[in-house]
Image (cartoon, rainbow, N blue to C red; front, side):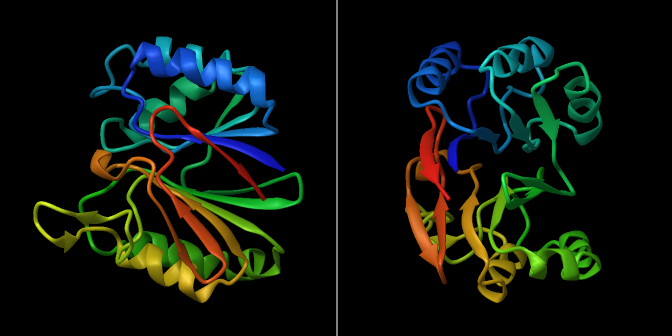
Amino acid sequence: MKILAFTDVHGYDKALRSLKAKSKRSRPDLVLCAGDFTVFEHNMENILRKINSLGKTVFLIHGNHESESKVRRLCRKFRNISFIHKRIVSFGGVLFLGWGGGGFSFSDKSFEDFVRKNKAKINAAEKVVFMTHAPPYGTSLDFLEYSKAHVGNKSFTRFIKSHKNVVLAISGHLHENEGKKDKLNSAVLSNPGLFGRIFKV
């Protein structure tokens, strides 16, 4: 499966046009958006319309610039976009787990509870793609050079480390780490940035 993933586009029209061209050229099976596609929800419906026009199935989560309720409501208007926050969705034989929002805490008890409740389904999957807005803790994706500190989420890191079927973990939030990649177990970790990257799983 070929995936085009992007994050933190913040309504930047040049990036949205570039993503459309990349989608047309690369012909991905699926598009992933890891949140912060607006600037504090400004012009949200129009931006979602442009994301919908990529012409592919899009799995999307909100970032810290969007509210869960508004994104959920507006996504229902677009046939190509599925809001997958707090959801597990199967596509092409791969399980996709989405967890949006946040970006400012080291742990997430709600996420940990969600994983416990869905343990059987997650463990039964051959391949899992994990998409969050905040990056996992202790990787190149959450390290801030100016403060020499890791600021990501430890709950996400524990999840990846304890589930060897996670093959790809997409996150954003920290613009400084756009384009960076890392690895935990067999999972490729990536902040694909606003212009997006192609992944094969």
